[in-house]
Image 1 (cartoon, rainbow, N blue to C red):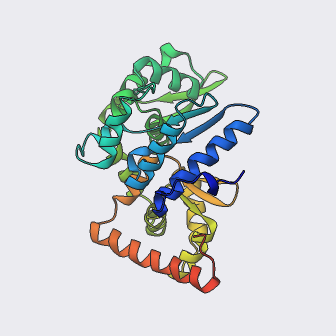
Image 2: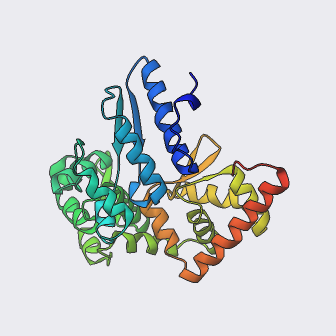
Length: 294
């Protein structure tokens, strides 16, 4: 199939041509696909205007296509802060589209109690009081409930106890209630990060400048630029739960809030300096190797 023959004459702008090509490619793939195609786009609240135009084009061109399923993940509380931003206007326009909006709320107390009960292998009635405190501290966010449990275990407030011949988890409720844990989940993560050694904190800061995922090629380039073993540092960070290793070829933050917390450990000037220095290092390596994939 020759796509160039059906390309409109007005499609001269590069970005517009790319959008047209994406739409036609999706049409072809869906036509020949033996089953439905699902497209998942995460963290749309951080998309730039060009990406939002591409998403809109894909949606418009797929209106009558029953074989394509779009799934977008977006933090509406983030975009509400900038009512004049392109992503806010895009989000408002989606409300008029035939899309189903599903709001995912944080867990209620019962949901947190089920999570804690399953984690500690105890009956829900035994974990209810602890779960109420965790629900309040973590604001019902399941990821941060895990982080809190890990913190309590490391601080010694959550421990193994032998009652008779049965080994089970136990905790000191008085100490947990008196333990000062910030209501801000982000502040909690930053506090945990601030306890890390300086080299691990620097590794998190460097990785946060690269986005949610950092490839091994980028790690190699930045290791040479910074004269450190960034891969070993990120391995240590991964072992502490702040990042995940994906198929030995990439590092990925375990949650976008973790990336945000790491990024906000730096001052604004420091962020600009890092972006400039890392960008020049990657560009220089790419030009030297004749590789523009990065």
